[in-house]
Length: 274
Ligand code: LER
Ligand code: MN
Image (cartoon, rainbow, N blue to C red; front, side, top):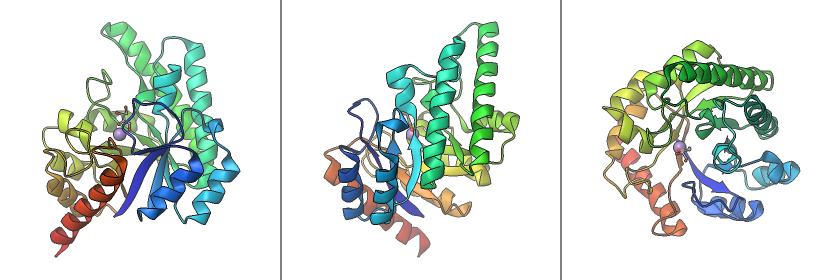
């Protein structure tokens, strides 16, 4: 398993991201902490210089694992389930730009907060699910043409009112039927929504494309009450060899969160494999 750190060049404070700053400093820092990859959250992919990102990724031998898109929802109000067609169009067009950048960098694109909400009215909720389906399908088709994977991330009930569990996600994935659509398991959300995190990971099997390894309090693994070794054991059981990305709060500070998360998880993995 490989390790990624979450970063953003955006000033936005609401997302659980380890490092913020100019993109060149972010690559330099993450490589100093000896991570294998870097997960970059971008409100709009044109907020950064694509050539510069490509150069930095090569210079530091640091693959961009996935592009986070949630800031497009949080800052610009763009979602796939919005009742307004113009908003949905802008959401899809925005994600298509993330997809182009991802194709350039060899990364995936995450869809989490962009899934949006559906509300309580049954008919309206059905319409919004259909809107979501059309938008996600269009993005998966565009991504497939460029060999890009889309990671579908369910969020906990306080952030999303319909796509919360592995089961919800597998249902959507089955409806879409795209080979380049994978499940992103975020253990912070799973800790709230899944009855048994290890069992869910085992039942996800090859649908699993990426992991946000975060503790129960959204701090780095080892700082809360998540049974991290159960999660790692389940990942080992299904032969997961992708990234574990620490999408967590920079607490007590970014330096310690980056250092301690990595050493804590590496030590557990060593114990589990011996
Ligand atoms: C995005 O990866 C995520 O987990 C969201 O909860 C961020 O708000
Ligand atoms: Mn997440």
